[in-house]
Image (cartoon, rainbow, N blue to C red; front, side):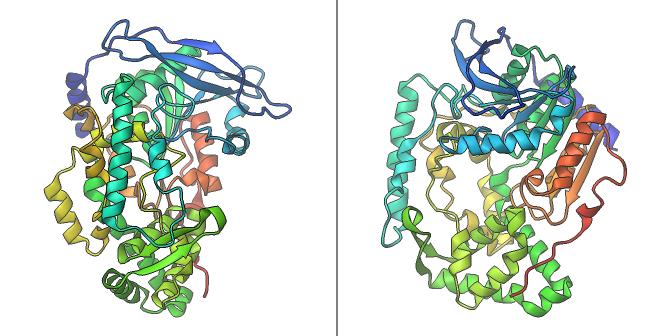
Length: 495
């Protein structure tokens, strides 16, 4: 059955896609914008990629590239090419955070670099790359502290004005939604590799970057020796339609694990029942709080939806998982300090995300194609968890943003004979293990490891996941007993 599905998808993909016009990518060396530690070496510069591959002479964009060089005397010819998540995030971080981020990269990449180089780059429109697609208007909307939370209407009006200003500037500089998509990101990544002389690569991708990696496998699988996909986001799912289910399954996992753990069950009896009662209570009578300290202080209206979002935020971070039952128990008793700290801001702006690039891709590939009937049915079926999308700004943004239109063929599953390692966290509320299984069904040489105590981006919290990733790139396979501790359920903190 899997082999038959594999053959069908290969045939459909071959019929649906024809190779784009290619321009020769160029690498220009330049100084590194971060400190290279003693005993290490890096090659930095930019790669020029075509602005539009379907139009000759359309100009080019320059993407910052850093190659963290191998410590081997003769590195393997196929480097590791890292694909960041987001969309809109930079692997280098921004501002003062760059040095700290790169310190992590030097340490994290050391096992890979025992045998091969590691390539990092900013995608078009992100970080230091051209064009600049950030929307500083959104970052400044919520910059000034407020004594009281704004209303939903006030927030929507402020965001609408900021998005409109950014969209107008976006268009005035000659940018359009046709310049930003997952297929274009895939072509850019391959051009970076080509410009650096790598005819074959090993992909290491996280979150949204796994969708780009899968598109590379679809378009140019022959150039990929192996791939590691951490927190898998396949092209044939729509996160907008499935958001209520994503929230429900994460909480279901938490409540079931607590109920089967004697200590957790004794410390937090009837946790699910009390949690749902609290959600209903806060939806009827929200609580206004001030959270954070000094410059980070912000006014928060704690609703049932905000508590659900806070729980999901904490579960997505593997290190915080052990404390989630205690946090929810405390909140159910009317002590909201801990849960309020995890409640995400309701504003759109994110200084670490290239908003314009993110809007272009999310509107094109998630929000606009989403079926409103499926969304409504999902919200009703998984109540009260459907409240996480009740005030979702996606539709408001995408009515204003000049996004392109996704081709139906892009939503087909990806079939490839390339060896692929898929990593999932059982508590991931963003890219659940179910999506990893879905992607694996058309990848016949794949291996899927699920870490029972992990959330989103497994390699960031599970040492064995990173060890497995390195071993898989080295050997294109893993032993049957790899990461035996992955199946261990979480141990929760006491009161």
